Image 1 (cartoon, rainbow, N blue to C red):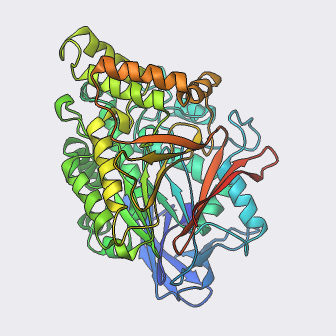
Image 2: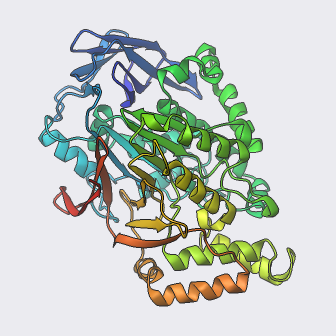
Image 3: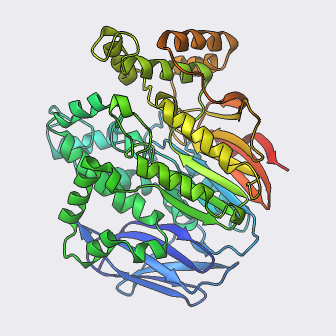
Length: 544
Protein backbone atom coordinates (compact mmCIF):
# COMPACT_ATOMS: atom_id res chain seq x y z
CA UNK A 1 0.00 0.00 0.00
CA UNK A 2 1.29 3.47 -0.87
CA UNK A 3 2.02 6.00 1.82
CA UNK A 4 1.78 9.77 1.79
CA UNK A 5 5.37 10.98 2.20
CA UNK A 6 4.77 14.72 1.94
CA UNK A 7 1.78 17.00 1.58
CA UNK A 8 -0.92 17.56 0.72
CA UNK A 9 -0.15 21.15 -0.21
CA UNK A 10 -3.07 23.25 -1.41
CA UNK A 11 -1.55 25.49 -4.08
CA UNK A 12 -3.64 27.20 -6.77
CA UNK A 13 -7.27 28.09 -5.98
CA UNK A 14 -9.77 30.19 -7.94
CA UNK A 15 -13.57 30.31 -8.03
CA UNK A 16 -14.04 26.90 -9.63
CA UNK A 17 -10.74 24.97 -9.44
CA UNK A 18 -7.80 24.07 -7.23
CA UNK A 19 -4.56 22.12 -7.36
CA UNK A 20 -3.26 19.84 -4.60
CA UNK A 21 0.38 18.66 -4.54
CA UNK A 22 1.53 15.41 -2.90
CA UNK A 23 4.46 13.04 -2.72
CA UNK A 24 3.64 9.31 -2.46
CA UNK A 25 5.89 6.40 -1.57
CA UNK A 26 5.31 4.57 -4.88
CA UNK A 27 3.61 4.98 -8.27
CA UNK A 28 -0.15 5.27 -7.82
CA UNK A 29 -3.33 7.11 -8.63
CA UNK A 30 -3.88 10.10 -6.35
CA UNK A 31 -7.44 11.22 -5.73
CA UNK A 32 -8.75 14.30 -3.97
CA UNK A 33 -12.34 13.76 -2.82
CA UNK A 34 -14.33 16.76 -1.66
CA UNK A 35 -17.23 16.59 0.74
CA UNK A 36 -19.50 18.20 -1.87
CA UNK A 37 -18.87 15.29 -4.27
CA UNK A 38 -16.26 16.91 -6.52
CA UNK A 39 -13.29 14.63 -7.28
CA UNK A 40 -9.89 15.23 -8.88
CA UNK A 41 -7.46 12.49 -9.95
CA UNK A 42 -3.88 12.33 -11.23
CA UNK A 43 -1.19 9.68 -11.70
CA UNK A 44 2.13 10.22 -10.01
CA UNK A 45 5.24 11.14 -11.98
CA UNK A 46 8.72 9.90 -11.11
CA UNK A 47 11.84 11.97 -10.32
CA UNK A 48 15.00 10.43 -8.82
CA UNK A 49 13.20 7.66 -6.98
CA UNK A 50 10.39 9.92 -5.74
CA UNK A 51 6.76 9.95 -6.85
CA UNK A 52 4.76 13.17 -7.08
CA UNK A 53 1.37 14.32 -8.28
CA UNK A 54 -0.35 17.64 -8.80
CA UNK A 55 -4.07 16.92 -8.68
CA UNK A 56 -6.38 19.36 -10.46
CA UNK A 57 -9.81 19.67 -8.87
CA UNK A 58 -12.39 21.33 -11.14
CA UNK A 59 -16.11 22.00 -11.01
CA UNK A 60 -16.06 23.69 -7.59
CA UNK A 61 -18.72 26.24 -6.68
CA UNK A 62 -17.60 29.86 -6.11
CA UNK A 63 -17.98 31.18 -2.60
CA UNK A 64 -18.06 27.78 -0.90
CA UNK A 65 -15.89 25.86 1.53
CA UNK A 66 -15.62 22.09 1.31
CA UNK A 67 -13.52 19.61 3.27
CA UNK A 68 -11.37 17.23 1.25
CA UNK A 69 -9.59 13.92 1.70
CA UNK A 70 -6.65 12.39 -0.19
CA UNK A 71 -6.63 8.77 -1.43
CA UNK A 72 -3.80 6.75 -2.92
CA UNK A 73 -5.21 3.88 -5.00
CA UNK A 74 -8.51 4.09 -3.06
CA UNK A 75 -6.81 4.06 0.34
CA UNK A 76 -7.39 7.19 2.42
CA UNK A 77 -4.11 8.75 3.58
CA UNK A 78 -5.30 12.25 4.56
CA UNK A 79 -6.43 13.35 7.09
CA UNK A 80 -4.15 11.19 9.19
CA UNK A 81 -5.85 8.88 11.69
CA UNK A 82 -6.48 10.60 15.04
CA UNK A 83 -5.37 13.96 13.65
CA UNK A 84 -5.61 16.79 16.19
CA UNK A 85 -6.29 19.29 13.42
CA UNK A 86 -9.61 20.23 11.79
CA UNK A 87 -10.34 18.90 8.28
CA UNK A 88 -8.38 20.46 5.43
CA UNK A 89 -10.67 22.53 3.22
CA UNK A 90 -10.88 24.09 -0.22
CA UNK A 91 -12.37 27.58 -0.06
CA UNK A 92 -13.29 29.06 -3.44
CA UNK A 93 -13.65 32.86 -3.57
CA UNK A 94 -16.74 34.59 -4.91
CA UNK A 95 -16.69 37.77 -6.98
CA UNK A 96 -16.30 40.83 -4.78
CA UNK A 97 -14.95 38.94 -1.76
CA UNK A 98 -12.44 40.52 0.56
CA UNK A 99 -8.93 39.20 -0.11
CA UNK A 100 -6.46 38.48 2.71
CA UNK A 101 -2.83 38.01 1.71
CA UNK A 102 -0.31 36.87 4.33
CA UNK A 103 3.38 36.94 3.44
CA UNK A 104 6.87 36.49 4.80
CA UNK A 105 10.22 34.90 4.00
CA UNK A 106 13.24 33.16 5.46
CA UNK A 107 11.99 30.08 7.29
CA UNK A 108 14.67 27.91 8.84
CA UNK A 109 13.01 24.60 9.66
CA UNK A 110 11.61 24.22 13.18
CA UNK A 111 13.60 21.59 15.09
CA UNK A 112 11.99 18.44 16.46
CA UNK A 113 9.86 18.78 19.58
CA UNK A 114 12.61 17.32 21.78
CA UNK A 115 15.26 19.78 20.49
CA UNK A 116 15.85 23.36 21.57
CA UNK A 117 14.83 25.99 19.03
CA UNK A 118 17.77 28.41 18.66
CA UNK A 119 15.82 31.10 16.80
CA UNK A 120 12.57 31.34 18.75
CA UNK A 121 8.92 30.54 17.98
CA UNK A 122 7.94 29.88 14.35
CA UNK A 123 5.43 32.37 12.90
CA UNK A 124 3.92 29.73 10.57
CA UNK A 125 3.41 27.35 13.49
CA UNK A 126 1.69 30.16 15.36
CA UNK A 127 -0.55 30.97 12.38
CA UNK A 128 -1.52 27.31 12.04
CA UNK A 129 -2.33 27.07 15.76
CA UNK A 130 -4.62 30.10 15.56
CA UNK A 131 -6.50 28.86 12.50
CA UNK A 132 -6.86 25.35 13.92
CA UNK A 133 -8.33 26.76 17.14
CA UNK A 134 -10.98 28.68 15.17
CA UNK A 135 -11.36 27.04 11.74
CA UNK A 136 -14.37 29.22 10.87
CA UNK A 137 -12.58 32.41 11.82
CA UNK A 138 -10.27 34.68 9.88
CA UNK A 139 -7.68 32.98 7.69
CA UNK A 140 -5.55 34.06 4.73
CA UNK A 141 -6.91 33.55 1.24
CA UNK A 142 -3.34 32.98 0.13
CA UNK A 143 0.04 32.59 1.81
CA UNK A 144 2.95 34.14 -0.09
CA UNK A 145 6.36 32.68 0.76
CA UNK A 146 8.79 35.10 -0.84
CA UNK A 147 12.10 33.31 -0.53
CA UNK A 148 14.36 31.01 1.46
CA UNK A 149 11.77 28.31 2.02
CA UNK A 150 14.69 25.93 2.68
CA UNK A 151 18.30 26.60 3.62
CA UNK A 152 20.62 24.53 1.46
CA UNK A 153 23.71 26.18 2.93
CA UNK A 154 22.73 26.48 6.62
CA UNK A 155 21.43 23.09 7.65
CA UNK A 156 20.22 22.10 11.11
CA UNK A 157 22.17 19.89 13.47
CA UNK A 158 19.75 17.05 12.75
CA UNK A 159 20.25 17.38 9.00
CA UNK A 160 24.00 17.59 9.53
CA UNK A 161 23.89 14.23 11.31
CA UNK A 162 21.78 12.76 8.50
CA UNK A 163 24.27 14.02 5.91
CA UNK A 164 27.20 12.62 7.89
CA UNK A 165 25.57 9.19 7.86
CA UNK A 166 25.18 9.45 4.07
CA UNK A 167 28.61 10.76 2.97
CA UNK A 168 31.89 12.24 4.20
CA UNK A 169 31.04 15.75 5.42
CA UNK A 170 34.73 16.56 5.80
CA UNK A 171 34.73 16.92 2.02
CA UNK A 172 33.02 19.90 0.35
CA UNK A 173 30.25 20.92 0.51
CA UNK A 174 30.37 19.62 4.08
CA UNK A 175 27.04 19.88 5.88
CA UNK A 176 25.49 21.86 3.07
CA UNK A 177 23.27 19.84 0.75
CA UNK A 178 24.91 18.36 -2.33
CA UNK A 179 22.23 16.85 -4.59
CA UNK A 180 18.55 16.27 -5.27
CA UNK A 181 18.10 13.58 -2.63
CA UNK A 182 19.52 15.85 0.05
CA UNK A 183 17.17 18.63 -1.08
CA UNK A 184 14.21 16.30 -0.58
CA UNK A 185 15.38 15.84 3.01
CA UNK A 186 15.21 19.62 3.53
CA UNK A 187 11.61 19.67 2.32
CA UNK A 188 10.73 16.76 4.60
CA UNK A 189 12.30 18.55 7.56
CA UNK A 190 10.46 21.78 6.80
CA UNK A 191 7.06 20.62 5.54
CA UNK A 192 6.51 17.64 7.85
CA UNK A 193 6.40 19.97 10.84
CA UNK A 194 2.84 19.03 11.96
CA UNK A 195 1.49 22.59 12.19
CA UNK A 196 3.04 23.68 8.91
CA UNK A 197 1.94 20.52 7.15
CA UNK A 198 -1.67 21.13 8.13
CA UNK A 199 -1.45 24.87 7.37
CA UNK A 200 -0.17 24.24 3.84
CA UNK A 201 -2.94 21.68 3.31
CA UNK A 202 -5.70 24.19 3.99
CA UNK A 203 -4.35 27.64 2.96
CA UNK A 204 -3.39 28.16 -0.71
CA UNK A 205 0.24 29.16 -1.24
CA UNK A 206 2.45 30.92 -3.78
CA UNK A 207 6.24 30.68 -3.60
CA UNK A 208 9.41 32.08 -5.12
CA UNK A 209 13.04 31.24 -4.39
CA UNK A 210 15.80 33.42 -2.96
CA UNK A 211 19.50 32.75 -2.53
CA UNK A 212 19.48 30.26 0.38
CA UNK A 213 17.20 27.96 -1.62
CA UNK A 214 20.43 27.42 -3.61
CA UNK A 215 23.30 29.15 -1.78
CA UNK A 216 24.01 32.47 -0.08
CA UNK A 217 24.68 35.27 -2.61
CA UNK A 218 23.40 33.19 -5.53
CA UNK A 219 24.17 35.11 -8.75
CA UNK A 220 25.73 38.07 -6.95
CA UNK A 221 28.09 38.86 -9.84
CA UNK A 222 29.73 37.48 -12.95
CA UNK A 223 32.96 36.72 -11.11
CA UNK A 224 31.03 34.98 -8.30
CA UNK A 225 29.33 32.78 -10.89
CA UNK A 226 32.63 31.95 -12.60
CA UNK A 227 34.16 30.98 -9.27
CA UNK A 228 31.20 28.74 -8.40
CA UNK A 229 31.22 27.02 -11.79
CA UNK A 230 34.86 26.13 -11.17
CA UNK A 231 33.93 24.48 -7.85
CA UNK A 232 33.66 20.67 -8.22
CA UNK A 233 30.46 20.25 -6.18
CA UNK A 234 28.52 23.25 -7.51
CA UNK A 235 27.03 21.71 -10.66
CA UNK A 236 25.30 18.90 -8.77
CA UNK A 237 24.05 21.34 -6.11
CA UNK A 238 22.66 23.61 -8.82
CA UNK A 239 20.91 20.81 -10.71
CA UNK A 240 19.47 19.38 -7.50
CA UNK A 241 18.36 22.81 -6.30
CA UNK A 242 16.60 23.92 -9.48
CA UNK A 243 15.04 20.51 -10.10
CA UNK A 244 13.72 20.25 -6.54
CA UNK A 245 12.45 23.84 -6.72
CA UNK A 246 10.50 23.06 -9.91
CA UNK A 247 8.99 19.94 -8.33
CA UNK A 248 8.24 21.20 -4.84
CA UNK A 249 7.54 24.91 -5.33
CA UNK A 250 7.27 26.20 -8.89
CA UNK A 251 4.87 23.61 -10.29
CA UNK A 252 2.19 24.54 -7.76
CA UNK A 253 2.42 28.22 -8.66
CA UNK A 254 0.92 27.52 -12.08
CA UNK A 255 -2.77 27.69 -12.92
CA UNK A 256 -4.60 24.79 -14.57
CA UNK A 257 -4.55 26.78 -17.83
CA UNK A 258 -0.78 27.24 -17.57
CA UNK A 259 -0.29 23.56 -16.78
CA UNK A 260 -2.36 22.54 -19.82
CA UNK A 261 0.02 24.36 -22.18
CA UNK A 262 3.32 23.69 -20.40
CA UNK A 263 5.44 21.33 -22.56
CA UNK A 264 7.81 20.54 -19.70
CA UNK A 265 4.98 19.42 -17.42
CA UNK A 266 3.57 17.28 -20.23
CA UNK A 267 6.97 15.67 -20.84
CA UNK A 268 7.48 14.99 -17.13
CA UNK A 269 4.08 13.32 -16.78
CA UNK A 270 4.61 11.20 -19.90
CA UNK A 271 8.06 9.89 -18.91
CA UNK A 272 8.68 6.70 -16.98
CA UNK A 273 11.44 8.58 -15.17
CA UNK A 274 11.59 12.36 -15.61
CA UNK A 275 14.93 12.82 -13.84
CA UNK A 276 17.00 13.48 -16.97
CA UNK A 277 14.30 15.72 -18.44
CA UNK A 278 14.36 17.97 -15.39
CA UNK A 279 18.14 17.92 -15.05
CA UNK A 280 18.44 19.03 -18.67
CA UNK A 281 15.89 21.77 -17.97
CA UNK A 282 17.85 22.91 -14.89
CA UNK A 283 21.09 22.92 -16.89
CA UNK A 284 19.48 25.12 -19.53
CA UNK A 285 17.94 27.41 -16.90
CA UNK A 286 21.41 28.12 -15.55
CA UNK A 287 23.25 28.38 -18.87
CA UNK A 288 20.49 30.34 -20.67
CA UNK A 289 18.44 32.06 -17.96
CA UNK A 290 16.45 34.02 -20.53
CA UNK A 291 15.01 30.71 -21.83
CA UNK A 292 13.15 30.01 -18.56
CA UNK A 293 10.60 32.12 -16.71
CA UNK A 294 10.21 31.49 -13.00
CA UNK A 295 8.12 34.65 -12.54
CA UNK A 296 4.35 34.34 -12.70
CA UNK A 297 1.07 36.21 -12.37
CA UNK A 298 -1.85 35.36 -10.12
CA UNK A 299 -5.20 37.15 -9.87
CA UNK A 300 -7.30 37.12 -6.70
CA UNK A 301 -10.48 38.89 -7.70
CA UNK A 302 -9.44 42.50 -8.25
CA UNK A 303 -6.00 41.96 -6.75
CA UNK A 304 -3.14 41.21 -9.16
CA UNK A 305 0.05 39.54 -7.96
CA UNK A 306 3.21 39.64 -10.08
CA UNK A 307 5.78 37.36 -8.46
CA UNK A 308 9.16 38.39 -9.85
CA UNK A 309 12.28 36.25 -10.09
CA UNK A 310 15.02 38.53 -8.76
CA UNK A 311 17.68 35.77 -8.63
CA UNK A 312 17.90 33.62 -11.74
CA UNK A 313 16.87 36.28 -14.29
CA UNK A 314 19.82 38.60 -13.62
CA UNK A 315 22.23 40.00 -16.19
CA UNK A 316 25.64 39.84 -14.48
CA UNK A 317 28.09 41.39 -16.97
CA UNK A 318 29.32 44.56 -15.23
CA UNK A 319 28.64 46.84 -18.21
CA UNK A 320 25.10 45.44 -18.66
CA UNK A 321 24.27 44.60 -15.05
CA UNK A 322 20.52 44.28 -14.44
CA UNK A 323 18.24 42.60 -11.94
CA UNK A 324 16.01 41.35 -14.79
CA UNK A 325 16.98 40.29 -18.29
CA UNK A 326 15.21 42.09 -21.17
CA UNK A 327 12.56 39.40 -21.57
CA UNK A 328 11.77 39.47 -17.88
CA UNK A 329 11.57 43.27 -17.89
CA UNK A 330 9.14 43.16 -20.81
CA UNK A 331 7.02 40.51 -19.06
CA UNK A 332 6.80 42.59 -15.87
CA UNK A 333 5.88 45.73 -17.79
CA UNK A 334 3.22 44.00 -19.87
CA UNK A 335 1.62 42.28 -16.87
CA UNK A 336 1.55 45.50 -14.85
CA UNK A 337 0.07 47.71 -17.56
CA UNK A 338 -2.29 45.31 -19.33
CA UNK A 339 -5.97 45.79 -18.35
CA UNK A 340 -5.18 48.06 -15.41
CA UNK A 341 -8.87 48.71 -15.00
CA UNK A 342 -9.36 45.04 -14.07
CA UNK A 343 -7.56 45.35 -10.75
CA UNK A 344 -7.66 47.67 -7.73
CA UNK A 345 -4.39 46.59 -6.11
CA UNK A 346 -1.10 45.53 -7.65
CA UNK A 347 1.20 43.36 -5.56
CA UNK A 348 4.78 43.06 -6.84
CA UNK A 349 6.44 40.14 -5.07
CA UNK A 350 10.23 40.27 -5.14
CA UNK A 351 12.29 38.41 -2.58
CA UNK A 352 14.76 41.32 -2.38
CA UNK A 353 13.48 44.72 -1.18
CA UNK A 354 13.34 47.53 -3.70
CA UNK A 355 13.64 50.23 -1.01
CA UNK A 356 16.23 49.69 1.72
CA UNK A 357 17.52 51.74 4.66
CA UNK A 358 19.15 54.76 3.05
CA UNK A 359 22.74 53.98 4.04
CA UNK A 360 22.39 50.40 2.79
CA UNK A 361 20.99 51.64 -0.52
CA UNK A 362 23.80 54.16 -1.00
CA UNK A 363 26.46 51.62 -0.02
CA UNK A 364 25.13 49.16 -2.61
CA UNK A 365 25.01 51.82 -5.35
CA UNK A 366 28.55 52.95 -4.45
CA UNK A 367 29.82 49.38 -4.45
CA UNK A 368 28.24 48.74 -7.85
CA UNK A 369 30.04 51.81 -9.21
CA UNK A 370 33.38 50.67 -7.81
CA UNK A 371 32.93 47.15 -9.18
CA UNK A 372 32.24 48.39 -12.70
CA UNK A 373 35.37 50.54 -12.61
CA UNK A 374 34.16 54.10 -11.91
CA UNK A 375 37.24 54.64 -9.73
CA UNK A 376 40.40 53.41 -11.40
CA UNK A 377 39.01 51.09 -14.07
CA UNK A 378 37.67 47.54 -14.16
CA UNK A 379 40.99 45.98 -13.10
CA UNK A 380 41.92 48.56 -10.49
CA UNK A 381 42.13 48.14 -6.74
CA UNK A 382 38.82 49.89 -6.15
CA UNK A 383 37.06 47.43 -8.45
CA UNK A 384 38.67 44.49 -6.64
CA UNK A 385 37.65 45.99 -3.32
CA UNK A 386 34.12 46.49 -4.61
CA UNK A 387 33.76 42.85 -5.59
CA UNK A 388 35.21 41.69 -2.27
CA UNK A 389 32.80 43.93 -0.36
CA UNK A 390 29.83 42.94 -2.51
CA UNK A 391 30.29 39.30 -1.63
CA UNK A 392 31.22 39.80 2.00
CA UNK A 393 28.41 42.23 2.88
CA UNK A 394 25.66 40.83 0.61
CA UNK A 395 25.39 44.06 -1.39
CA UNK A 396 23.17 42.68 -4.14
CA UNK A 397 19.65 44.05 -3.76
CA UNK A 398 17.85 46.28 -6.29
CA UNK A 399 20.10 49.17 -5.22
CA UNK A 400 23.12 47.20 -6.47
CA UNK A 401 21.54 47.23 -9.95
CA UNK A 402 20.99 51.01 -10.33
CA UNK A 403 19.43 50.89 -13.79
CA UNK A 404 16.96 48.24 -12.67
CA UNK A 405 16.13 50.23 -9.54
CA UNK A 406 15.33 53.26 -11.69
CA UNK A 407 13.40 51.22 -14.25
CA UNK A 408 11.19 49.73 -11.53
CA UNK A 409 10.57 53.21 -10.10
CA UNK A 410 9.48 54.42 -13.55
CA UNK A 411 7.23 51.39 -14.11
CA UNK A 412 5.52 51.78 -10.73
CA UNK A 413 4.88 55.46 -11.42
CA UNK A 414 3.50 54.77 -14.90
CA UNK A 415 1.30 51.95 -13.65
CA UNK A 416 -0.02 54.05 -10.79
CA UNK A 417 -0.85 57.19 -12.78
CA UNK A 418 -3.88 58.21 -14.83
CA UNK A 419 -7.24 56.69 -15.67
CA UNK A 420 -7.49 53.10 -14.53
CA UNK A 421 -4.70 53.41 -11.97
CA UNK A 422 -5.01 51.03 -9.00
CA UNK A 423 -5.57 52.27 -5.47
CA UNK A 424 -2.29 50.77 -4.24
CA UNK A 425 0.92 49.32 -5.62
CA UNK A 426 2.61 47.29 -2.91
CA UNK A 427 6.11 45.81 -3.26
CA UNK A 428 6.25 42.70 -1.05
CA UNK A 429 9.72 41.51 -0.01
CA UNK A 430 11.72 39.68 2.62
CA UNK A 431 15.39 38.60 2.84
CA UNK A 432 16.76 41.19 5.30
CA UNK A 433 15.59 39.55 8.57
CA UNK A 434 13.52 42.46 9.80
CA UNK A 435 10.30 44.19 8.81
CA UNK A 436 9.49 47.76 7.83
CA UNK A 437 7.24 49.96 5.70
CA UNK A 438 8.75 52.57 3.36
CA UNK A 439 7.01 55.06 1.08
CA UNK A 440 8.65 56.52 -2.03
CA UNK A 441 8.12 59.99 -3.47
CA UNK A 442 8.83 61.16 -7.01
CA UNK A 443 10.38 64.63 -7.57
CA UNK A 444 7.84 65.53 -10.27
CA UNK A 445 4.86 64.39 -8.21
CA UNK A 446 3.65 61.09 -6.87
CA UNK A 447 1.45 58.69 -8.85
CA UNK A 448 -2.27 58.50 -8.17
CA UNK A 449 -1.86 55.07 -6.58
CA UNK A 450 -0.26 54.83 -3.17
CA UNK A 451 3.06 53.01 -3.56
CA UNK A 452 4.70 51.27 -0.59
CA UNK A 453 7.57 48.90 0.11
CA UNK A 454 6.40 46.24 2.58
CA UNK A 455 9.24 44.08 3.88
CA UNK A 456 8.60 41.14 6.22
CA UNK A 457 11.31 38.74 7.34
CA UNK A 458 12.01 36.32 8.92
CA UNK A 459 9.24 33.78 9.43
CA UNK A 460 11.60 31.68 11.55
CA UNK A 461 15.22 32.80 11.82
CA UNK A 462 17.37 35.31 13.66
CA UNK A 463 19.52 38.38 13.12
CA UNK A 464 22.65 39.19 15.15
CA UNK A 465 22.60 42.24 17.42
CA UNK A 466 25.24 43.95 15.27
CA UNK A 467 23.03 43.65 12.19
CA UNK A 468 20.02 44.97 14.12
CA UNK A 469 22.08 47.98 15.10
CA UNK A 470 23.21 48.47 11.52
CA UNK A 471 19.68 48.38 10.09
CA UNK A 472 18.43 50.85 12.69
CA UNK A 473 21.36 53.17 11.99
CA UNK A 474 20.78 52.90 8.25
CA UNK A 475 17.60 54.99 8.43
CA UNK A 476 19.15 57.80 10.51
CA UNK A 477 20.09 61.32 9.38
CA UNK A 478 23.85 60.80 9.99
CA UNK A 479 23.72 57.60 7.96
CA UNK A 480 22.01 59.42 5.10
CA UNK A 481 24.75 62.07 5.15
CA UNK A 482 27.45 59.40 5.03
CA UNK A 483 25.58 57.67 2.22
CA UNK A 484 25.69 60.87 0.17
CA UNK A 485 29.47 60.91 0.58
CA UNK A 486 29.67 57.34 -0.71
CA UNK A 487 27.52 58.24 -3.72
CA UNK A 488 29.75 61.20 -4.47
CA UNK A 489 32.89 59.08 -4.25
CA UNK A 490 31.38 56.48 -6.59
CA UNK A 491 30.10 59.15 -9.00
CA UNK A 492 26.64 57.65 -8.62
CA UNK A 493 23.53 59.27 -9.99
CA UNK A 494 20.93 60.48 -7.54
CA UNK A 495 18.14 57.89 -7.10
CA UNK A 496 15.01 58.79 -9.10
CA UNK A 497 12.88 58.67 -5.94
CA UNK A 498 13.24 59.64 -2.32
CA UNK A 499 11.65 57.56 0.40
CA UNK A 500 10.95 57.55 4.09
CA UNK A 501 10.33 54.81 6.60
CA UNK A 502 6.74 54.96 7.85
CA UNK A 503 6.81 51.83 10.02
CA UNK A 504 9.42 49.75 11.81
CA UNK A 505 12.02 48.45 11.93
CA UNK A 506 10.63 45.38 13.73
CA UNK A 507 12.74 42.39 14.68
CA UNK A 508 11.33 38.94 15.42
CA UNK A 509 9.68 35.97 13.71
CA UNK A 510 6.79 37.62 11.92
CA UNK A 511 4.18 37.77 9.19
CA UNK A 512 2.43 40.64 7.41
CA UNK A 513 -1.22 40.39 6.35
CA UNK A 514 -2.93 42.62 3.80
CA UNK A 515 -6.72 42.88 3.86
CA UNK A 516 -7.98 44.18 0.52
CA UNK A 517 -11.62 45.06 -0.12
CA UNK A 518 -12.64 47.16 -3.09
CA UNK A 519 -10.11 49.98 -3.21
CA UNK A 520 -9.35 49.88 0.50
CA UNK A 521 -6.26 48.23 1.97
CA UNK A 522 -5.19 47.49 5.54
CA UNK A 523 -1.86 46.15 6.78
CA UNK A 524 -1.20 44.17 9.96
CA UNK A 525 2.15 42.91 11.27
CA UNK A 526 2.13 40.06 13.79
CA UNK A 527 4.98 38.40 15.65
CA UNK A 528 5.23 34.90 17.10
CA UNK A 529 5.25 34.83 20.90
CA UNK A 530 6.85 32.34 23.23
CA UNK A 531 3.42 30.92 24.13
CA UNK A 532 2.88 29.93 20.46
CA UNK A 533 0.45 32.72 19.62
CA UNK A 534 0.64 35.59 17.13
CA UNK A 535 0.52 39.09 18.54
CA UNK A 536 -0.20 42.25 16.54
CA UNK A 537 2.54 44.86 16.75
CA UNK A 538 1.44 47.18 13.94
CA UNK A 539 -1.70 47.98 12.01
CA UNK A 540 -2.36 50.69 9.45
CA UNK A 541 -4.86 51.66 6.77
CA UNK A 542 -2.94 51.92 3.50
CA UNK A 543 -5.89 53.11 1.41
CA UNK A 544 -9.27 54.25 2.77
